[in-house]
Image (cartoon, rainbow, N blue to C red):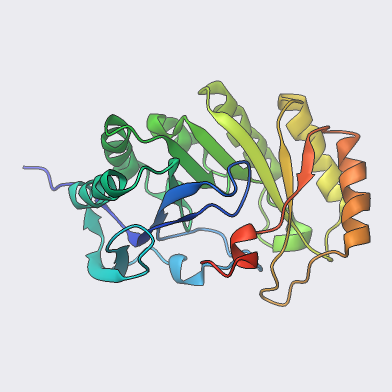
Length: 254
């Protein structure tokens, strides 16, 4: 008999989305553990390692009271907690985040159809470096929020070619896609413009959100004047370029 699929989970909770196109909407957040990148500005260091440990599961939407369960958890248990959450309060999306959720495509390919069957839409938040894993997770096709990795900001050394391939795969599966790029005072503007060019080559109608870094790991955001200049430069390449800070942090919400 095959063992039931399991997922390495950091936490499950209900919150207000603070980034990207659906900022302000209520979402269930499924935060998976494990990431193959080490971005200098990472604000979820507890989710970097894919290893056994405690998972925090909110007891009811927005309560900020948590049960602790031992991760990895069976997909059936994760699904039941998420579906129970949704029955208590209708959320805009199930936001699958991390870490990097596409490190665990097998478990997601079992979990997401169950969530979809309960009426939920799926929003996948990803670093955009695993196109093959994306193709395995067919149910991730509602919303894909893809990070554009800029080495001058994150020092993660991500190959733009792999990101271009990922974005192409996301478009091909018919998802609603938008991109986010964290920017700091250390940004190389040429690197940002080059990223905008390959995004525009794939789909010039896509939205790119420039997200000023929240102060972490010694990184500091650009000045307001610098943001205006950067946005103007990128808008010449990708017209729908917007500036949006992490609103949940401005609110004091995790």
